Structures are given as C-alpha cells and as structure tokens.
Length: 416
Ligand code: HAM
Image 1: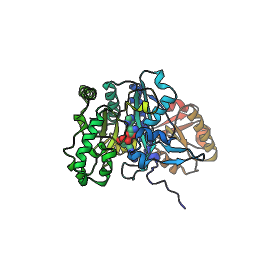
Image 2 (image 1 turned 90 degrees about the vertical axis):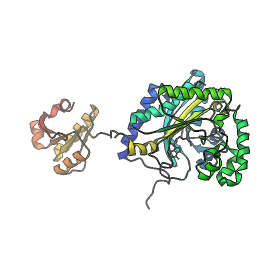
Image 3 (image 1 turned 45 degrees about the vertical axis):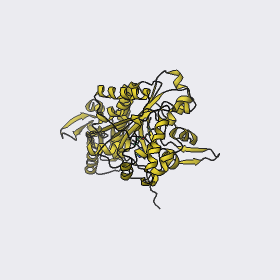
Image 4 (image 1 turned 60 degrees about the horizontal axis):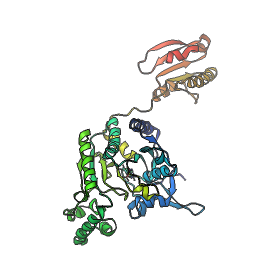
C-alpha cells in the first residue's frame, strides 16, 4: 500500500524550497527594517482561545477548525490563524507591559478544513504581523504597507488594495439594526447561506460572492456611511496617509472580513493572477480583542498573508527568484584510493565553508561529469592515481569551460 499526503495538504518539494527560502528571507528583511520582531507560537492551542477571538459564529470556528480531544480530554485546535496565538503569548508573557508599542511578526503553517481548490488548502502557510499598543492610524498604514513592501521586493504586480471601516462598538449596533431591517425586506431572495447570516452576522451578507445576493442588497446601507465621529476621523486619516505614501487603493463599503474581531480599519490585498481565491493578504484593527482575551484594554492592528497564494502569483507574474545554488565544487574520483581522498577532502572543504559534493555511487567518470552538470556545480576536479602522485589536478569551470592546474594542497585559494 502506498501512502499519500492528506487531502488539502501539499509537499513543498526541493525544486520549490529555494523560492520559499527566498520569500522567507525577504519577509524577515522587510519586518526587520520596520522593527517587527519574530514570535513563534505552538501549532495547537486551547480550542476556546479561537472561539473567543475569531468569533463563535464565524465559518472558521463553526465549520473549519481541526479540533480534537487529547488523551486527557482537553479540547485542542490546530491554529487556523496566527493573531489569537500571538495575543495569547503576548499576554501570557507580559510582553505588552514591557513595551508601550509591541511589534511582532510570524511565519508558519495554519490549518482550516475548507474545501480544497486552487489556492485553498487545509494546511497552508502565512506570514503576518501584529502591532499592539497604539490607536494611531499611522500604525494601520504601516501594517498595510508591510505586505506591499514584501510584494514589491519580490516583483509581484499588479495588486489591488481595498480598504473599509467596519466601525466600533459605538456605531456598529445601530447600523446593524438598520441593515437587518433592510435585509428582512429582501429575505426571500437571499441565498440560504445569507439567510442564515441575516440575524447572526448580517454584515457578512454584504460580502457574499453570490450574484443574486449582491443584486438584491445593492441598496443596503453601508457601515462606512454610518460611522461615529471617532471611526470616521480615523478612517479619513488612514486614507489620507495612504495617499501620502503613494499606495493606490480603493474603498469598498462591502468589505467585511471573515473574522469577528475587527474594529475600524479592514483591508484586503488581491491579485488578478489568482482565480476565485484571490486574496493574497488581509487584516485590520482589533481594538477590543486584547481585553476580550483577558488583558488590559489595548488597541491592536495586524495582517496575515498566504504564502501558497503568493507562490502561485510569483510563478505566474513575478520576477524569477534565485533558486538554491549548486555546489562550489564537485570532486570526481576514478578509483578506490582517489575516492577515499575525495571524500576526506570534501569533508575538510565543507568545514572550511565551501559547498562540495563528490560521488557516492562509484560511477564512471563520464556519468560523474554529467551529475556535476545536473547539480549545477561551479567547478569540477578530476582525481585519479596520476593526480594523487603528482599532487596537482585539472580544475574545470563548468560555466565557462576553462581549465587550470591546481595544487591539491591548496584547493581553497583556487576556489575562493
Ligand atoms: P485571513 O484573511 O483569514 O486573515 O487569512 C489571511 C490570508 O491567508 C488570506 O488572504 C489568504 O492569502 C491566506 N489563506 C487563508 N485561508 C487559506 C487557505 N485555506 N488556503 C490558502 N491560503 C489561505 C487572518 O488569518 C487574520 N489572522 C489576519 C489578521 C492578522 N488580522 C489581524 N491580524
């Protein structure tokens, strides 16, 4: 019987990991330059943490979590997103007490039992950031620009940035009542999914992808037109700062994200190179979440971006990414004594910092040369009885083809 990977999971093969490592390096560099420090949280957490933060009635919590009881009967969940875990860790270790503004970033796997399709997996990877401690719209814009910097450095274009404000606990309840009243007038024409949402999560009806839903809700009131003074001023500031930084964006009053913790700013970055799952990144402000998780009232804002979707876009549109390079040197050996010499020299040169490979399959010289070529080795050194006796050998450049004689005792200077 042959085993296969679980539906919705994906092996990242050696031919792809070069690209992944490059992207991870760019993420680290962008985050470092904006003074975000890395945090790594466990893969699983107490189930209640996600129900409490993402929202009991969201699709993620009701339908998509990998939840299981461990042997002691505790309910655990593989993390479906990073924000809840990062906040839990920040509170547990008093990180918000130690810094008035805490800026953290993360990269890692997340798990959601969704219907797999292109760009939608059950184990996928995100990079993201969370900033805790400031209500300033400048921080919203810093967060929005972080993934855009990463995409720019990777040569990903074109992108669409859409923003909205989802209001706060002061302005949302009255708006929600108005929206429900409007939705009740078209209730019969809504899709079953939207009908179910009318009472529980009416804002989500507005970003339904169903054409009929969108048509009958065309005249629905939008939260951005019903913001309280504080939310409106904040949203105006975010827009004027985005203008000032030169980042193109549009306002979409229907943008409501699938997680309940947002207040004020919500945003999404999409790419037309993706199919129906076109969101590359999303995020927003969550000024009530820290308190909701038992901490002192602390404003926060953050984003997360999908890595698999980014890889799809990079493949389709991005600038070519430097793949892992081949060895500096391949030592080809033709008999037992030279194979022994090749092996010990290989280990010695590796210790000195060179990437070196040799033959482990007792292959013919011709097939060793082919292998060196396949591995994209920069140099090849051919060793046999004659070379060992003379203490010199031919070093062949696999790119230019030129050869030179080198002393075997001083390969380092020839390679450097
Ligand atoms: P999210 O919109 O659920 O937000 O996910 C962010 C990104 O993760 C999406 O835009 C998408 O690129 C990727 N993603 C989500 N689900 C999948 C999937 N099943 N397969 C592949 N990629 C996926 C959050 O997770 C929030 N924690 C973002 C945030 C951070 N808000 C504030 N701070």
